Length: 316
Image 1 (tube, rainbow, N blue to C red):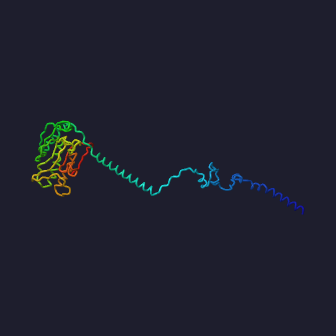
Image 2 (image 1 turned 180 degrees about the vertical axis):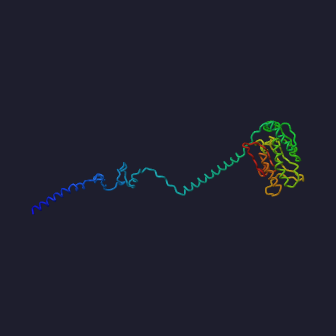
Image 3 (image 1 turned 30 degrees about the vertical axis):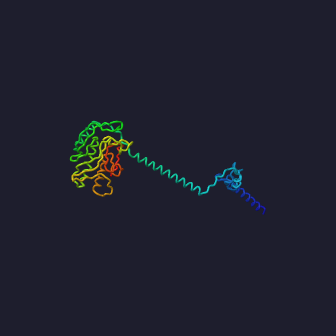
């Protein structure tokens, strides 16, 4: 009995000895795994914005009412105005501003209209070569003329007037007389001849009144201010640059007189419109009925030179 007990005890001790290394090995921590001591300790609660350190303003009162009570009492308070008074003043100010703006706009518009028409450039002496070329071209068109002596201004009251080489044209084209006598520059006569050939004759043929026989004018060279208005600038007539056409006479004996014809609706109105509009292709200034009261009875045609080759065409 004792022997068996002893053997059992020995067997138990041997088994225990054999199991101890394995158990120790199984319980030894794995260096590749995180250890319990390395894991972060959980915080009691997350940090909130209110947990920030108090600023220098922490001593200031938080309650809005207390802050208002501590505000200085001597701060001026703006005076209150009735709402209707402000509106009335605003309306008055807007009305005044609108009136001033309208007045300013009117002044700007008037100034713009005045600036739209460049003033004629000062006349230059006749170039001999240009004069010869003009005379040859005028003859080639069939005009008949004579060359007069230079027109010299007489006295201070005629300063700026005169024509170096005035032409007295009796026929502007073959078979078409120019009456009465004329005194004008060759360039003016040449522009007139080209206008009659290119614009007046085709329009005249549409009237079935026969051949155009006479071109009647009111004036060519005259030493005077514009529109005979004292203190006005010198007229282009005073330089030999202008002619005023009063009427057109035909082979049938009938004449078409330049006059206000707006709304007549007849052939003479169509003729006047056609020749007036066509004149803008040959002259730099065309004024007639409807442009102003000074030109209700004639077509004013001139060759005034302006900057940028500007043309003033106010045709009937």
